Image (cartoon, one colour):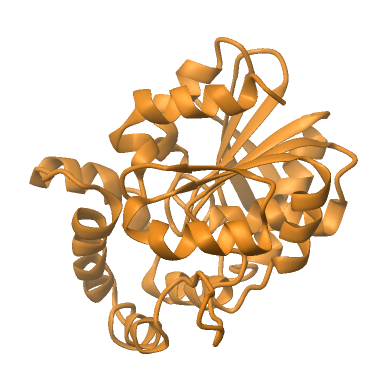
Length: 272
């Protein structure tokens, strides 16, 4: 796992951990709900050969400071803006996985497209909850309610939720206990009451406006996991037809199939 990172004081008594490697066009990776820069271990060194790679542990995630305020995705966007301004990055490529895509779309929502070269989002729909039958959503209402009410009401229940979430939703192959513990090691560091705030913030987010702006204006791509493809691919073709769409593996396909993922991402990046 990755430990050679830096810390940036985002506000008094609150630091954001980030990795900054390589030179060239900035490629910024934002992890999903409670996960950290570690999930991109197979992308960071690979892309640092040709890009300046930034990967973050957002507020209250992993090595960043756990705080009782700002645990929502609008604040995570503001934190990202502060960090990228501090690093003086220009002409950036944003890459967001899962709820990290709410942050990348949110960056565009708040900052516009003047400093964004391209957008890469991984297995995330811009609106998690919808009553439209053809919508790609983050889950069924009953499932979302059950997760919030019963699976995140203690640190123990959260860990018990994260294990099958990882083994059944994240990857295809069977994982050893050691692998599961490595994957969720930093995720379960975030206290359950903060994970609940972030879960609700993500599920009630709507980044449709930003997604439409991206669709019309800049190069973008979307990676979709195979179990979601039957709903997500037609949804993208109907409402957001311009992003390049790739279908691969499960939710954490970039970790499980890094060679395949990196090859597809290379294909996109070489043509922007």
